[in-house]
Image (tube, rainbow, N blue to C red; front, side, top):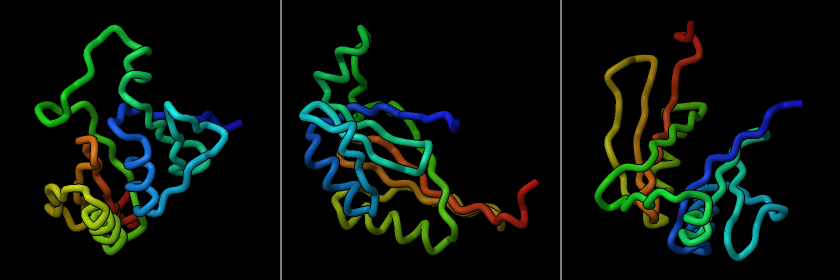
Length: 133
């Protein structure tokens, strides 16, 4: 059986986060959804669990990061082409996110960052499969 992975992220407004990522083309698993959280499906084994901040806080004694001042995570997702990188980031910006830096120093890799509504940084990358190895 494939091992499932869940990245957990705190959000200020769950409905707005779900709406934002739905506009980017992601689906959510209704089995893992309630007023405290929603599970975004990346693929068959990788998921992102968005949790409202008070619920997220209940899992740790540590202070939550103020994402307007500090970075908490840097999530990198790959896509199939350079065009798909641009398409995803443009969707994120249209949905209210903020475009960040591009990485285009190498012929075999291209990436572009965006920041979501809660200040979490995402990098969308393409790597040429012929250059792998």
